[in-house]
Length: 140
Figure 1: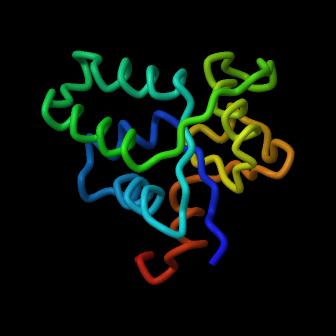
Figure 2 (figure 1 turned 90 degrees about the vertical axis):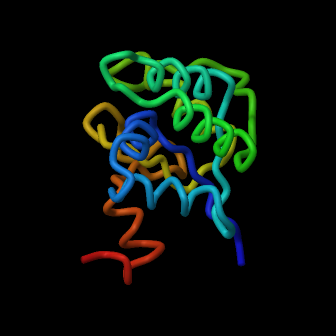
């Protein structure tokens, strides 16, 4: 089976931390297991770490460390070699840069409005769309 190449936006990781029973936690678990392949860049990992550490989110330190370790140990780290200026939120360009180098099939986000519908071969989709594609039996 051909691996599914994925990039996950920070809001999915945050929701996975805050709602253990939510779709985003399922997305994260599916993304780190075969046949999927999760791609991250140093900038994306830094943003995950920074956002999960925000006091207002109240993500326990132990859970934050577990999530970050899980992502680091089950993802493929790449270093984009060019900077893009495509997204409505300049901080989101790092996700398209990663998707570009990874040749990602999907960028999964809760903020579709910040991104184009497609970036080259990468389709920008929500958690619900991703689940309906890869595990439709999980949808209620």
